[in-house]
Length: 399
Ligand SMILES: *Cc1c(COP(=O)(O)O)cnc(C)c1O
Image (cartoon, rainbow, N blue to C red; front, side, top):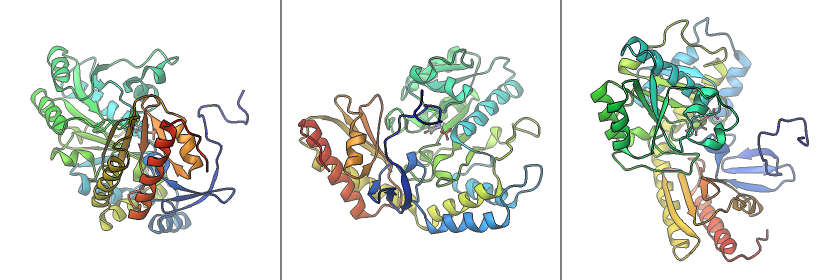
């Protein structure tokens, strides 16, 4: 039985936060923590960013919700802004990453039926992918642990190894039901896995040759985190569909599914919807987020902070035997360990740093705010490096 009235869906650390400011969180006992996780890539602008706070308060005092049965100017404005920064054409708004991916999956199936005349559309998805917890997105997810106990899964997904172009080409050539390829440009939950530089370009080519939709899940990598507004912008390609959520609202729940070209007009009235999706309050917050990312040049900031942090870790940990890899793209950062070290998240908290350990307990994942200062970044590098060395030497960690 859970200890409180919550369903026991999370193993939670025993800390509760009372307020946040920039890169810092303050707990109910007045201790402060450097937040190198940003609520899992959500608070890219840090906590209590004045532009977001002001947008939310101002909008909440005027109008929170109407309905998608009416025109929502804030939603139209946000769609316009997102299409401008992404090169995409049309946007569907929802409330989470999983919902954005559900929209993309439904769009791909409808595209298969209507455009390709395929009765049982299938989507190629990757090993170790994470696309969400709803039934369809869970089925697209490449993690048996997350799926176990929830069978029957949704059919219509065919799996390929991540970062393996030939495997995708092979499936696309041999399976006549394939309508789309769905992939994270950088795998997040499975441990910040970064594919070959031209991976997305090659997938784009395969999709072009066979009229398939290229669907990119940028729920985690979008909104400046990779060092570009969207990670595919490193490759100078456009996907047919891109989904995002996490960093879009800086904590206000909002997700988006963007489409262009042959995918832009597939969903029509009656084919998909959401009661809350794109409501005035969520859109006001997201508009402030997108504008701030652009005005404060936070994509470039993410790229330069990334270089500073990775160089710092490589320097500090160059002789540490316990480390098998240090990698990152923008502020998606990982230190991979030789063996499982899940308790490092607890020990880091003792040291006043919030991070998370993923990828089977072997990958220390850091997703700091794009607004982090150089001195905060240095503090992160120094504290985490010292912690890893102490931990690897089997010495006790003290406050
Ligand atoms: C977090 C995440 C999701 C799921 O988002 P929710 O908002 O939790 O539903 C989907 N895809 C990726 C790549 C994610 O990182």
